[in-house]
Length: 163
Image: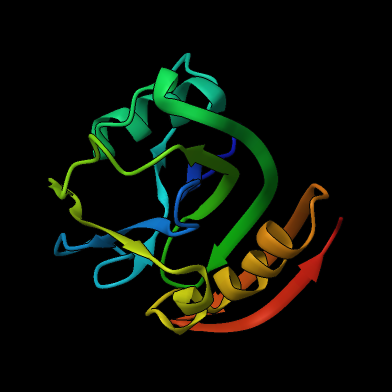
């Protein structure tokens, strides 16, 4: 007999403006979304027959209006396994992107408002605790990273660094 497994494969990209160093966040605003009220990078769920690389390009364009040719950098930087007692497990592919400037970026989309934030302010935003750990690797270390973050409700109860 087969086993039913519930999990999601997702992508997440933090896009930096080359001219200012600011980072693009989406303030999630959909009721029922586990990320409602949180500030996140751009991204979403990988669709059937889609690679994570294809997904992140699609999601960036859909949510922000930034096309692939506007990105001067798009690099897979890490993997996060998100485990929760409230939500299905997610395997997140974390990307780092860069644009020359913020021209052409939408102010909002159907998932929330888009806001550029100075890099020195990102850890003060209403974000998941594990994101603060991830930012240390994303912005202070050029190496590929892999973590497992386990949450009890909104509280980070376990973190395991694999790489």
